[in-house]
Length: 179
Image 1 (cartoon, rainbow, N blue to C red):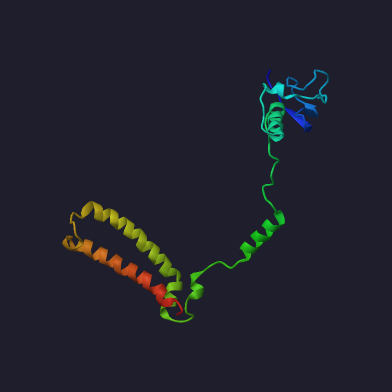
Image 2 (cartoon, rainbow, N blue to C red):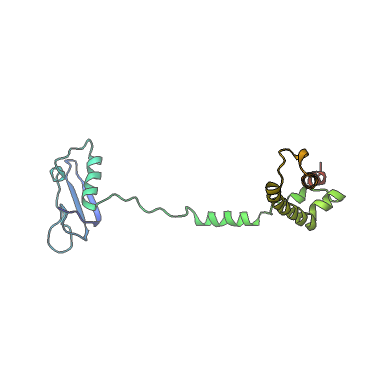
């Protein structure tokens, strides 16, 4: 027979292995359900109602009986957040932390720290990186030399210029740091 679902208010098992159920019924085509009204009668159920299966312990039988009667065993719903107050406090603490900025570790005076903190240096570096990406495309299409020293002069000048700028861009922040 097809098994429906029920909302059971109590499911119990006694020492002899008999199961009783009380609760509201959605489908009455289950073992243990009477055809009267929409209520389960507390009617004992025996292990032979479950195809004569034998279980090693009453707990195993209880779980099998629950699955047979209810359709599945569901864990109680868990809260999405364990402690809302603690979570709010943690978010506030995270938002109130000062943002990490490497310039806090720079010298207060000096040329290197002035260059490293300047907006134009940052913008110039981004422009050089963009031009380098375009130059790689040009170099790949137009430079047939296997080695840089065998390439035409414009390719050598461009590659060495990028190397010098990127070295400068790497050294300046190190000179700006406090010891």
